[in-house]
Image (cartoon, rainbow, N blue to C red):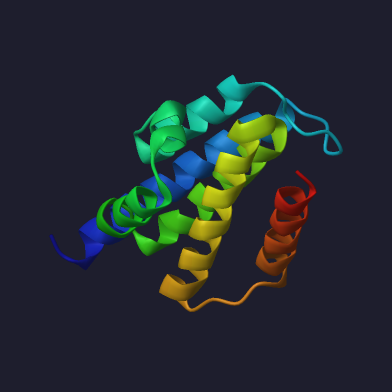
Length: 134
């Protein structure tokens, strides 16, 4: 399982994400957010091999353990964004649950990859605003 195997796996994974993003963006206006939870269900299943319900049911400590044990560092950011945009389309306690988890994984992704992104800080600020308003 040399370097080429890992490279091939990562390249296949990136291609699959690209396909999903093309399908998702072609089906939605650039200024509207998807409101159908099945869009997100497909993302969870395709890229993380778990159902949306699985992520909804995890506690924050279980999600941290799962993320560190089961996911590669490059998968953390896509998971955080999936949770974020899914949470923005949810309501009530489900929205709070998803947004808290998105914040947790965004912070974990930044720590694990030692990356800095103004956009991620904007996402965190948006999450805080949504969590504090409800």
